[in-house]
Length: 83
Image 1 (cartoon, rainbow, N blue to C red):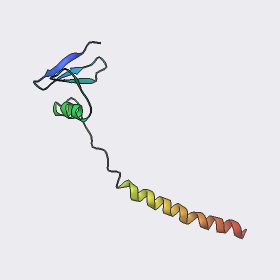
Image 2: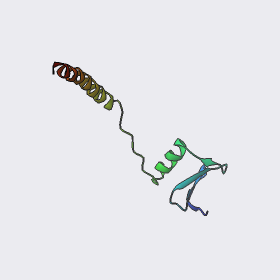
Image 3: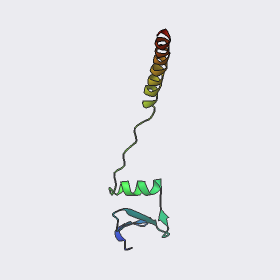
Image 4: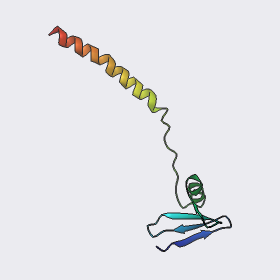
């Protein structure tokens, strides 16, 4: 599998793999992975990083829906008993 050198600095080398993904190797020739790799590729404008939506805003909506469902359930049971 041949990799094409995209950029080389004193700290790291960036390669483009045959599947169009990127590999980053440190000055010690060992692969760089995880958050450090993402930071390097984003700084070189090779990838775009999006910030995930905050789940805190969604939590109250789920709670409200659960409360509404629990309030409706007893009403349905009562109407079934009356028949």
